[in-house]
Amino acid sequence: MRANYKLKRLFVGQPLIEGVAIAAEKDQSHYLLTVLRMEAGSELLLFNGRDGEWRAKLEMPAKKKAVLIPLALERPQPPHPDLVFCFAPIKAGRLDWVVEKAVEMGAGAIRPVMTQFTQNTRLNPEKMNAWITEAAEQCGVLAIPKLESAVRLTELLEGWDSSRRLVFCDEDSATDNPIEALAPLKSEKLALLVGPEGGFSDEERDMLRAKPFVTAIPLGPRILRADTAAVAALTAVQMICGDWNGNH
Amino acid sequence: MRANYKLKRLFVGQPLIEGVAIAAEKDQSHYLLTVLRMEAGSELLLFNGRDGEWRAKLEMPAKKKAVLIPLALERPQPPHPDLVFCFAPIKAGRLDWVVEKAVEMGAGAIRPVMTQFTQNTRLNPEKMNAWITEAAEQCGVLAIPKLESAVRLTELLEGWDSSRRLVFCDEDSATDNPIEALAPLKSEKLALLVGPEGGFSDEERDMLRAKPFVTAIPLGPRILRADTAAVAALTAVQMICGDWNGNH
Image (cartoon, rainbow over all chains, first blue to last red; front, side, top):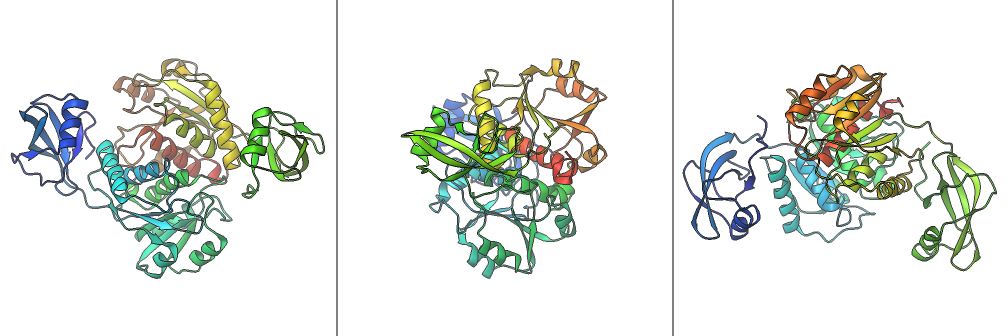
């Protein structure tokens, strides 16, 4: 079922149960009442990543204090997407963008991976989780991707669950089109790995290609920046193997 | 032939002819000598959108003055991409990103289109051209997309060359996967139209669907922001019909 475009959508931590009031956090009250200037009786949508999306009514028992009353389930909680999005963090100012895009494109888990050319190694998980929530609010995503802890590429590969195929974007591929490499993976559990600006090192590329659970894919004839590669690869994977194609 | 990753790539306006010196513009000299601290004798790559990509040598006849000597053709000028990328300009801060992505993804022309929900109607073509050049430098794109003048959607459709198919991203589609709609267009001249944040109005969507030269495509089951939709749609079109698939 498609998301409702018209109502404001808000993430809350609390359970969503018909008629059971939720006191908004201070910053949420500020946002709803001062920024959006919503009035008592207004409707909005609530989700918590577990209980689906609820139409809710805003009440205002005191000035600057919002209370939210879930009225009716609008969309049931969808199955959590299985796709794991692994990426080498890029510089601030583009990093938030990549995280936002992973949410929009239906990642189930987001995992920062440190590679040889990774520039940005100081990550702020709290900030990253805020970007994830915000992107979910904006784009009607109910299944909020889990932010996993950062890991070195070597460790990621050593600990890999080999029942999950790791698709990596290989800028040094001999072909341009990922369809052929992706088509056989339609019924597999998938993870995607996108490199940093500057790509993977030759050593890393060799290491990846040598793993039996890895599939290398090309992303066209041009060099793509890391943020573009992230969206292009997510599009290709979702379109050929994923939930654009009826799989989860 | 793939682009060389290692050398700095610079756009110049002048013709590129072996041994014929090019005086760098003032801001280019500053960039090469002060920002990058390149020294006389260093090599870089030059392109002008017409003569292919040249390996060149930096000379410094005076302090803070760079002269560039084309040495050898590295990559011949590719055919100009035929894909026209039409998009409703979004707010500053995301607009540059969309223009950059259109260049990376191989648009041949970039055309701003004003729709009912378009927020950003004050465009700066000079700035947009600078983004285009910068993206081409960064990503090894030799065929620089032409920035066309902004047009209202109604006028765009009235003046449309009906031998070119206009693919538009229809967020109100009944299906999720664009492959079926794109597959029959492999040998057609194509343009892509991406709407603004908030999408097209119902009226605009009806108007688009009624045109015989328009194909509506879905972009998955989730709402995408306009910038995400731009990259996702360019990926889908290039992968199924375009130069990821051997067409131009």
